[in-house]
Length: 119
Image (spheres, rainbow, N blue to C red):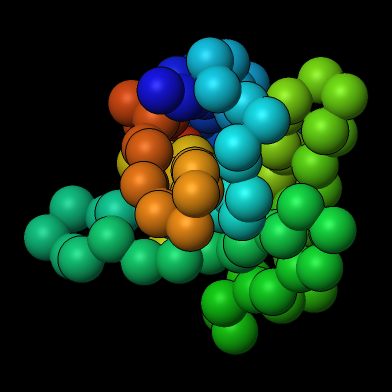
Protein backbone atom coordinates (compact mmCIF):
# COMPACT_ATOMS: atom_id res chain seq x y z
CA UNK A 1 0.00 0.00 0.00
CA UNK A 2 0.97 3.61 -0.54
CA UNK A 3 -0.12 6.55 1.59
CA UNK A 4 0.03 10.11 0.25
CA UNK A 5 -0.15 13.20 2.43
CA UNK A 6 -0.38 16.65 0.84
CA UNK A 7 0.51 19.96 2.44
CA UNK A 8 1.11 23.56 1.44
CA UNK A 9 -2.31 24.72 0.34
CA UNK A 10 -3.89 27.92 1.53
CA UNK A 11 -5.20 31.34 0.60
CA UNK A 12 -3.07 33.48 -1.70
CA UNK A 13 -3.64 36.70 -3.59
CA UNK A 14 -3.68 36.76 -7.39
CA UNK A 15 -0.13 36.82 -8.69
CA UNK A 16 1.16 35.04 -5.62
CA UNK A 17 2.92 31.70 -5.24
CA UNK A 18 2.41 28.46 -3.38
CA UNK A 19 4.41 25.27 -3.10
CA UNK A 20 2.51 22.05 -2.56
CA UNK A 21 4.19 18.95 -1.19
CA UNK A 22 3.10 15.33 -1.25
CA UNK A 23 4.92 12.84 0.94
CA UNK A 24 4.58 9.17 0.09
CA UNK A 25 4.97 6.33 2.56
CA UNK A 26 4.42 2.60 2.50
CA UNK A 27 5.44 0.55 -0.54
CA UNK A 28 7.30 3.47 -2.08
CA UNK A 29 9.72 1.28 -4.03
CA UNK A 30 6.87 0.38 -6.36
CA UNK A 31 5.82 3.94 -7.18
CA UNK A 32 6.21 4.95 -10.82
CA UNK A 33 4.46 8.06 -12.14
CA UNK A 34 3.30 10.77 -9.77
CA UNK A 35 1.11 13.73 -10.53
CA UNK A 36 -1.02 16.57 -9.26
CA UNK A 37 -4.69 16.85 -10.16
CA UNK A 38 -7.17 19.53 -9.17
CA UNK A 39 -10.91 19.78 -8.86
CA UNK A 40 -12.78 23.07 -8.76
CA UNK A 41 -16.35 23.28 -7.47
CA UNK A 42 -18.77 21.92 -10.04
CA UNK A 43 -16.02 20.70 -12.34
CA UNK A 44 -14.36 17.39 -13.07
CA UNK A 45 -10.98 16.51 -11.65
CA UNK A 46 -8.25 17.47 -14.11
CA UNK A 47 -4.57 16.71 -14.49
CA UNK A 48 -2.31 19.64 -13.68
CA UNK A 49 1.15 18.11 -14.05
CA UNK A 50 2.81 14.72 -14.00
CA UNK A 51 6.32 13.38 -13.51
CA UNK A 52 7.81 9.98 -14.18
CA UNK A 53 10.29 8.20 -11.92
CA UNK A 54 12.95 9.35 -14.39
CA UNK A 55 11.79 12.98 -13.98
CA UNK A 56 10.11 13.46 -17.34
CA UNK A 57 7.36 16.03 -16.90
CA UNK A 58 4.20 17.15 -18.62
CA UNK A 59 1.80 20.01 -17.92
CA UNK A 60 -1.77 21.00 -18.63
CA UNK A 61 -1.81 23.88 -21.11
CA UNK A 62 -3.27 26.51 -18.77
CA UNK A 63 -0.46 26.11 -16.22
CA UNK A 64 2.53 25.88 -18.57
CA UNK A 65 5.13 28.47 -17.65
CA UNK A 66 3.58 29.06 -14.22
CA UNK A 67 3.85 25.67 -12.59
CA UNK A 68 6.77 23.31 -11.99
CA UNK A 69 6.47 19.73 -10.80
CA UNK A 70 9.50 18.10 -9.24
CA UNK A 71 10.29 14.95 -7.38
CA UNK A 72 12.77 13.92 -4.72
CA UNK A 73 12.93 10.15 -4.80
CA UNK A 74 15.23 10.08 -1.76
CA UNK A 75 12.56 11.88 0.28
CA UNK A 76 9.68 10.14 -1.46
CA UNK A 77 8.12 13.51 -2.07
CA UNK A 78 6.67 15.29 -5.08
CA UNK A 79 6.31 19.06 -5.22
CA UNK A 80 4.20 21.50 -7.19
CA UNK A 81 5.58 25.03 -7.35
CA UNK A 82 2.85 27.39 -8.53
CA UNK A 83 3.60 30.98 -9.50
CA UNK A 84 1.51 33.82 -10.94
CA UNK A 85 -1.57 32.24 -9.44
CA UNK A 86 -4.95 33.26 -10.81
CA UNK A 87 -8.45 32.95 -9.35
CA UNK A 88 -9.19 30.16 -11.81
CA UNK A 89 -6.47 28.10 -10.13
CA UNK A 90 -8.72 27.85 -7.08
CA UNK A 91 -9.43 24.17 -6.45
CA UNK A 92 -8.69 21.22 -4.24
CA UNK A 93 -5.35 19.80 -5.35
CA UNK A 94 -4.81 16.05 -5.14
CA UNK A 95 -1.61 14.07 -5.24
CA UNK A 96 -1.61 10.95 -7.41
CA UNK A 97 0.75 8.00 -7.45
CA UNK A 98 0.84 4.93 -9.64
CA UNK A 99 2.02 1.83 -7.85
CA UNK A 100 3.15 -1.01 -10.08
CA UNK A 101 3.88 -4.50 -8.80
CA UNK A 102 4.48 -7.46 -11.11
CA UNK A 103 3.04 -5.50 -14.03
CA UNK A 104 -0.19 -4.62 -12.23
CA UNK A 105 -0.94 -0.93 -11.65
CA UNK A 106 -2.79 0.50 -8.70
CA UNK A 107 -3.65 4.16 -8.32
CA UNK A 108 -3.44 6.02 -5.03
CA UNK A 109 -4.77 9.46 -4.11
CA UNK A 110 -4.02 11.86 -1.34
CA UNK A 111 -6.76 13.51 0.70
CA UNK A 112 -6.44 16.83 -1.12
CA UNK A 113 -5.33 20.30 -0.12
CA UNK A 114 -7.34 23.45 -0.77
CA UNK A 115 -5.83 26.26 -2.82
CA UNK A 116 -7.78 29.51 -2.90
CA UNK A 117 -6.65 32.43 -5.03
CA UNK A 118 -8.51 35.56 -4.06
CA UNK A 119 -7.94 39.19 -3.17
